[in-house]
Image 1 (spheres, rainbow, N blue to C red):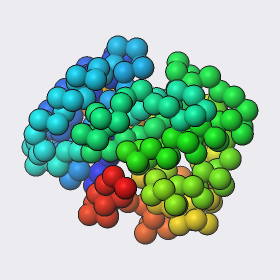
Image 2 (image 1 turned 90 degrees about the horizontal axis):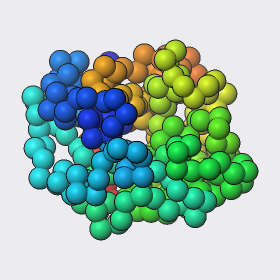
Image 3 (image 1 turned 120 degrees about the vertical axis):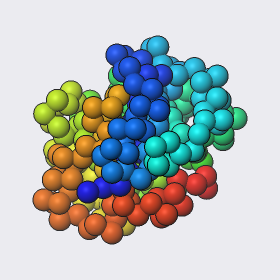
Image 4 (image 1 turned 30 degrees about the horizontal axis):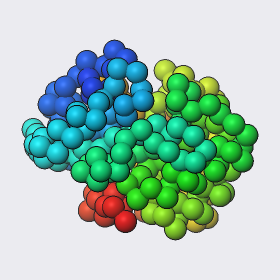
Length: 237
């Protein structure tokens, strides 16, 4: 059993998600989670969180139903220069940021161009997690990303929604194997993430946990149960 889920979406992310943060925390508590990260989509995603929404999170309760809460954002990577869709002034008020490529906001280039976009976004001191970079639509050099992540203090995620039967990113198996191989080589930690949109999949790492265990990935590099260490990794560098 894992105790934290750092990639989840509330009603503020739009596209059909109808759960409030309070309800998500209640579900997390029922599932035995101790730490929940709320990471709604950035403003460039249609009908998602506005800058004023992310500003207001600063005043939200830090514990609900006995679950500690961290408030972050899933940023959209916008171009190969690593620009994202929230100003640093607001990012500095959040606990952490995930940076991801989404087809609506980032037009995939060559493997080299996509890699450069990820390398550049990791220069942002508020970006702490690379989101679902297993997506075959955006080919990247995982060796280069892992080497950079090691120096930048950035974490990779193994995304349940990429590996589960209900996923929509295609076959991500080979890419996730390569992520794990590179993370072992460079001793880069990972997180298992549900990417739950609403309450249904909060804390569900069924496919992701099976995948990492079959790959014999070291438990010491999985941060979901190492909450004090996880919080250190999420601090702004």
